[in-house]
Amino acid sequence: MESGLLPDWMIERDVKIVPFAPNLSRPGVISYGVTSYGYDVRLDRKFKVFTNVWGAVVDPKNFDPRSFVEVEGDFCLIPPNSFVLAETIEYIEVPRDVLVVCVGKSTLARCGLIVNVTPLEPEWRGRVTLEISNTTPLPAKLYANEGVAQMLFFRAAAPCRTSYADKKGKYQDQPGLTLPIVAGEQ
Image (tube, rainbow, N blue to C red):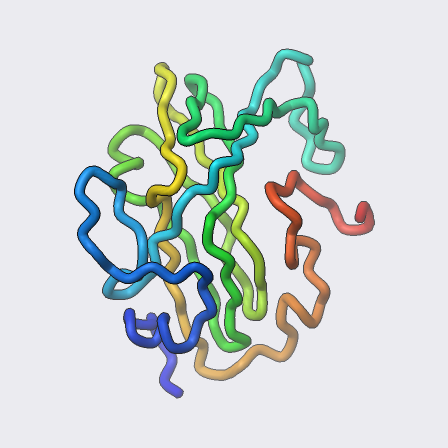
């Protein structure tokens, strides 16, 4: 197989995405589904909104779960200069010879909302936990069941020696919105 960025038909054929949405016009909705060279994922209805009411220190080795307020609904408000963790509706299984890079959608970026996710490594599987930052001095609104980020699928020249599944990656099959984990904590 050739290496490079996967087009729409290869994404549909080679990558397990459930539910898989075709590229359709959906007036009044932030777009989602397969695109020419990617797949726009949607937000689920559960959110973890960052708060500092307890005066905690943000420590990736000892993250205080009280730093988040859980919200479930059709939308979520992100406080100014804060962030939210959210999860995709889509379940994704990455093939052994593919790496996935996630980028934010321009509609959200133009509102000062930045989506951050590390690459999905070969043979990673699950629903993706996204970090969405509000860089503005105003509250920002996110909509569940609508597009939030685009996944780009890159096929390597050859399969990797050790995949995410082989090394038993700590976020494999994560059970819902997952907070930071440092190896050895599980």
